[in-house]
Length: 74
Image (cartoon, rainbow, N blue to C red; front, side):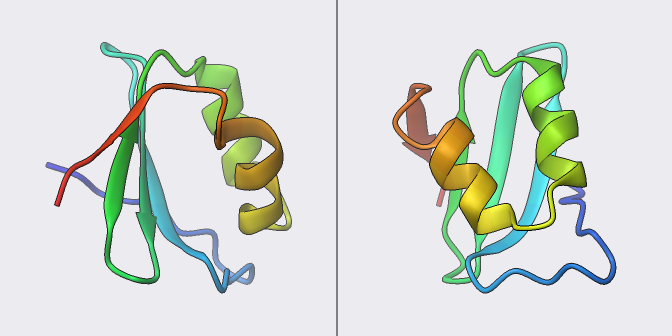
């Protein structure tokens, strides 16, 4: 079951929610478009930083996009 955390008070125009599966080191990102992607072999520290970031879209662009293998889930 995916819960997709959303930081209260920090809405994003790009990212709707994120989740993390520590046993698989998998970061799940749901975009406002409705698309969900799984990013593989992402350290848990990246997920923690992502949750705390003030700008989800900016963090995603700088620290996740083009750095990890990914696949679309839906």
